[in-house]
Amino acid sequence: MIHPLDSIASVLESTGEYRVLRRVGPFADCTDQPTEPTFIGLILDTETTGVDHTHDEVIELGMIKFEYGASGRIYRVLQVFNQLQEPQKPIPPEVTRLTGITDADVAGQRINDAAVRAMAGDAVVVIAHNASFDRQFCESRWPIFVEKNWACSCYQVPWRNEGHEGMKLGYLLTDYGFFHKGHRAIDDCHALRALLAAPLKTSGRLALACLLETARKPTLRIWAAGSPIATKDVLKARSYRWSGRRRCWYIDVEEELFDIERAFLSQEIFQGEVIDLPTERITARDRFSIRVNPEASD
Image (cartoon, rainbow, N blue to C red; front, side, top):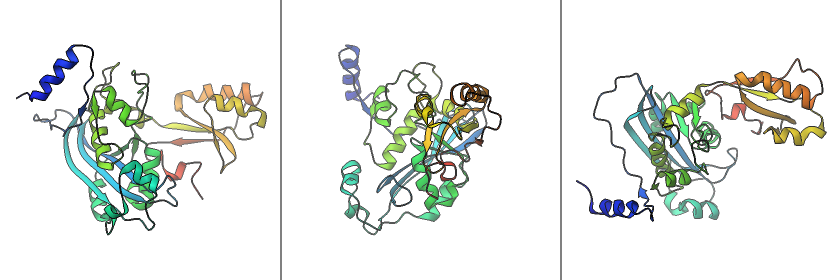
């Protein structure tokens, strides 16, 4: 049965003068049985007291455990988890303004570590919308996340190529005609689940299928060791990043692009053939982890 408000929304949209945003709703499990191999995935989001995993703490953890097929189709939600944690220090006012989480909300609360381990145990991939942030906080607190494959729905889906101007969760939802209560862990998880289940606007591919394809590909981290100081702007313009810890510029590229990058360094940076170029091979097991983060504290 069509809700009366849905009829009103459809009339408004049909005029071409209005866009109607609908709140992200619960996932409707598929009634038919999968005809392809299926796997267990975990969508995860954290709210924290700050951005430094070495000093700040998780104050909220949200997770959605789901079953998906080799095609990237999401078949059913298996479990939903959301718990708060009282930090050792008061929540900074700017965090409360952003998330709405107050000291009163978290007083006496503690995330059940055993429940987290049980829920994450059989997941073959953990997905977060800013995996480099969430992974480092999670693996610091829950060792089970250290050896998991991780994927980043923000940077490993070609949102801009698919016609989106922004990659933030709220922007993407708006483009799909939805909205949610942002900056709370489980609400962000539900929003991301809705995006992953949808076809991309230009290619029509399922967002989850595209994400998993990218996440499975190994990448190479290339270090421009010994590059002249005068070339820093050239490196920066080519998307190299500076590692303060190693005092070196680096870039992550797909394996098949290695020869192209070596040619660039030889011609533009070192003015001669580079033979022993320092590289590291990175897979989803290590990507976004503290172990391979050049800026992580020793």
